[in-house]
Image 1 (cartoon, rainbow, N blue to C red):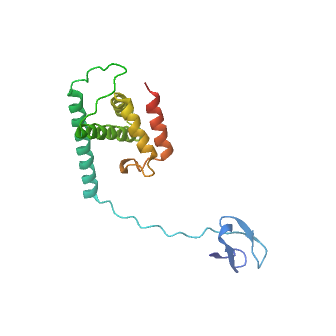
Image 2: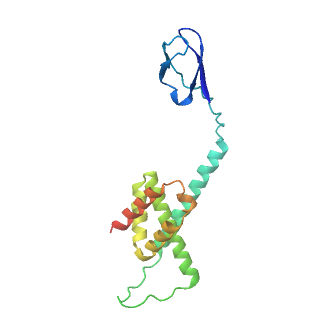
Image 3: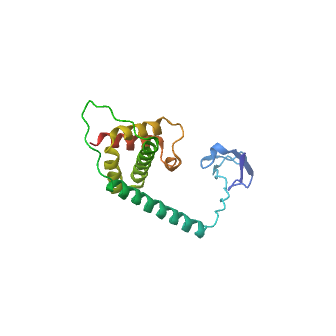
Amino acid sequence: MAIEFHCEHCGKLVRAADEYAGKRGKCPGCQQSVYIPTPEIEPLPIAPVDREDLQRQRELLDETRRLTEKITRERDTLPPEPARPAKQTRPAAPEGDARLSHAVMEEAVINYAKAMAAGDLERAEQLGREIRRDPRMGEEVIQRIMVDEIPPAELADIPRPVLIAFFKQLREKK
C-alpha cells in the first residue's frame, strides 16, 4: 500500500512505498526534499474493564491461596517418615497415597515457578524447601513438566527459558 501526500513546496500529489515512511525523498515535480510521513494508524478500540470479572479473579486467587496454605499446614502436621536403611528399597505406597503426594508435589513445583515469576522470593524459598524434602519426586515432576511440549496452564505465561532457569536454580540449591 502506498503513502500519499502533497508536496509542501509545489502541492503535487506524491506517492511513496511504505518502506520510505519517516524518511526524506525528492518530489517528482519540483525536485525539492520532502518528508515522507508515516501512514496514520487507526487506534484499536479498547474494551471497558469488567469490574465484576476482576473481582471474581481476585476471589478465585484468594481461594487458591487459602487452599494452598491449608494443604501446606496439613502436610506439615503429618509425622515424619521413619528413617530407612540406605540400601533398602522403598516399599510401594498404596495407589491413592502415591497420586496424592505426587499431585501435591506437582502443585508445589508449579507454585514455586509462579512465585519466582511474580518476584515473591520468600514464598518461592518456602516452596523450594518443601520440594527438596523429597528430591527424587521433585525431580520427576520437574522433568515431566519440562518434557511436556505444552506446559501446565498455570505456567503458560512464563517463557520456557525462564521456566528452565527457575528449575535449574531450584535444583542447585541444597
